[in-house]
Length: 536
Image (cartoon, rainbow, N blue to C red; front, side, top):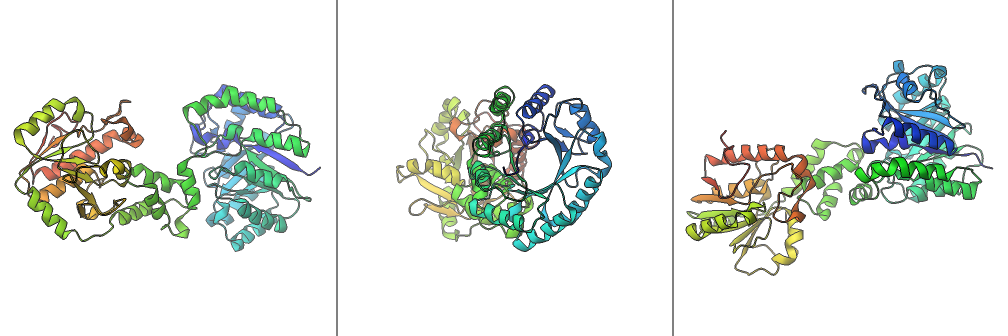
């Protein structure tokens, strides 16, 4: 029978979901059930000197903390390991293996520090531990770079070397290529492992690909987690791998113990913070890039999926898997600053707006709850009415669109509007058919002094200031709250990020309004968080 081992990473990799706070009772129960299930290798958490000891968490500052949490528990036939992200736990925090509950330590590192990481692995090996060399972001390695790493690994002779598909980019051909390379050049005494992620829904399938053809002359290790627990799209479910290995490799893993752990310990976490296949992680994987780039762009809530893909496509190779917030911000702003010649459109708008009273309608709740107040203002003043990124139940003259995502949501209704209602769009928004009535340079309307440079309220006020209007009134610009109730007249318009950053967005808007109030009169018709705070 081939030498194949199953590794469970729930208490370590699963911890990204809940900041490793499983609770002490759950930690012990999960551990004992994994051991009772005969899992070959159980990973019990991270060693990270930056953290304080917490008996409820599986991220621990040193070996003493490991002993305090797990000491005295029965290991059964399982090999017990921890993990170090190289650079986060110095060798001085690692006890000799005889004095630590751990049998082995897995070390993860990126390719630009492979030499230092392998030297660190050598120090750990000298302390008596079984060492696992984990090449994270394996897809970032060229064949030449992988060969250089394998040469270092052969000199070290660790217990195992693993391919780590950090961002779930492996398809079968990628996996087989790196696997064959490692299998050919690694010493046979070194085990070969695979750690998958599920961005393309291929984590389990890729593991099965290796399990169906295990190497004849070396140990094979495959990683999984209970119920696939892991950040984002998650990992290969260890219970599925155990079932596969029982049926096809004559293993004897106790599935009931795994299922009990899922039912009792894992599902409660899943209900609070679900993981699994998602659009965000698919987009990241399909663009071979770090998922934080996708998070940054989706959190903007101004881009269509097509636009997000176009921006990600512009990321250079060396930046793709090394997240750089400043870099992606520059790409975003450059993309949004799509140029256009708006001189004629600006002239026409200035002629239409100059000397007039303008009412801006936002999508806040008060546009509905204080409708009588708003309508009285309209009846009395007879302003030009501009709706901002939504279609209100009012007779409007213009609709201002600066958000490509909002436009996609509204496009079918916009196409049915009375042609007398004119559309003003910024150049980052593309019309589904034909042209907008007016298209303005997006970059010219940004508030470069603001943190949220493309607040549509501020952009439109800047335009109206240029157009020399007499007065600007606002209704439905309520500001954002942290309350669970929606800030929008239509709850479907709610964005999750506005709740998390409510105060930040409000304060930024207040600062922008204060800068603009010196040049154009601004008044709020309906209740707003901004009222009374602009000059306070």
